[in-house]
Length: 292
Image 1 (tube, rainbow, N blue to C red):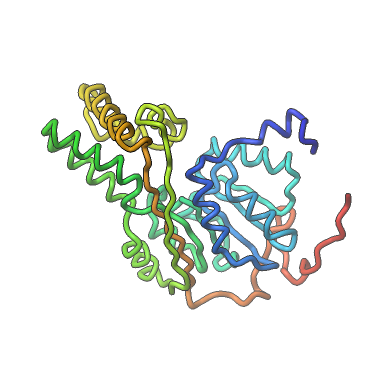
Image 2 (image 1 turned 135 degrees about the vertical axis):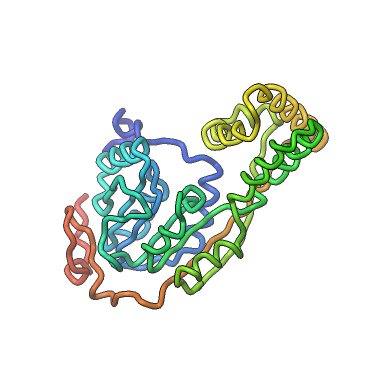
């Protein structure tokens, strides 16, 4: 693998600033241990899957699963080109994992829980989980302006849809409650925040992350015949806010949770995925000498 090889550079993709912020939050609190079998739920195109594999080293095995076929395929390409031998990637539903119970020592989900169609079913599959997520209040400055615009237009149906949309993110109390209902004991909780900064509302709406990650959902809040009017007014109000403040600054709250169930297998009974098969951990405790 050479830095200037076209095949290598083809998998050097961009992690959005938002995802990177949550990734840094995850790794700043995650305890690193040897000889773990780790599952990344909702691994997408490979972040933080490959970072988990590489910072934990060769004694650990990391499996990534996602139902997103278009994300899994480039993740597999990255694995092949990066020669990351302790990674396995599967196209699978997090609510119906194709593994035996208690096979993983650690399950990680970075920004995945908001995208699970049935989070409770996912939690039922887990025994120790670390997750990061954003909360209600995500980009609160934007949503306050959105709410104000819809109030001015006096379209109650749109306001109701906006409230339902915002409530999907949940709160730390709701998420920790769901985990406890699923039989988990919370062992660590940390909160943080960072800010996304844009010159103005136009730059915000033109940003790649906005177009790919958010815009389609926001369009569902308004009827098609009102879309141009609503979003033109929304952009104008965001630009007005940016002129008054010198920039458009949006707050992103973060939550880090660690939880585990009381019934877990002993380390000697946990298996690793090696070469497509499961092998006992005791066979892997000493990493092989490096070949330069």
